[in-house]
Every structure is written in structure tokens, then in C-alpha cells.
Image (cartoon, rainbow, N blue to C red; front, side):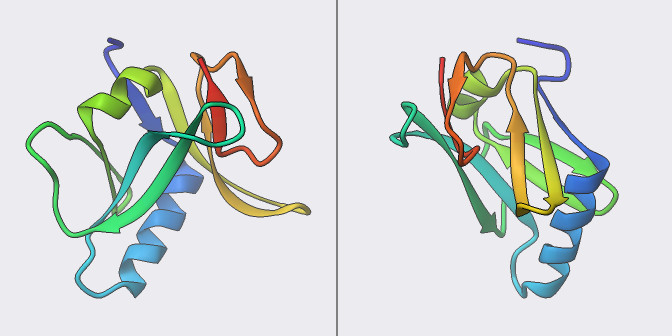
Length: 110
């Protein structure tokens, strides 16, 4: 496992902080990996109100992100980013372990 297994870009932190400010009772975003999606695995984003005992907790510029230990195995070395361009706005995960991903950017394979 990397020294910093998952990082959060400044753009992602800013967007997550804005989302959390608008959501009563939620204080973090949970990013997890689940089976399924067009490439084998997919990322899931949920707003939550607390961490689990085995979560990695990322904090930056008012944003909090939790990643559970099982998802961390697949996300080691990844960066969570937020992209705002002509194609739209979305969270994207730059995962060095993924050997393939789909066009939607939320599905990958290892």
C-alpha cells in the first residue's frame, strides 16, 4: 500500500465541500468500489454522516472523503478529481491500477 494511498485534488475538495455545505446531516463523501459496470468494477459516490472503523479519511480544504479498506485495495495510488469542461461536470478517479476503463469514466478493470 502506498504512503498516500488515495489523494484528493483541489478541484475535487472544493466541489465536495460545496456539496456538503448544502446537505444537512451529511459531513463526508464516501467513495467505494463495487462489482459491475461495463468494465468490471465501478466507483460509487455517497454522502454520509460518519466514518466506519476501517475507513481511510481524507481531508482537504473543508472536504472529507471516506474510502473503506476493501475499496482501498483497488484504489491504491489513485487521485479523486473533479472535472468541469464542455462535456459536463463529474468526479473522476485517476487510478494507476486500472488497465481499462469505459467512456463514462466510472467503470474500470484491473
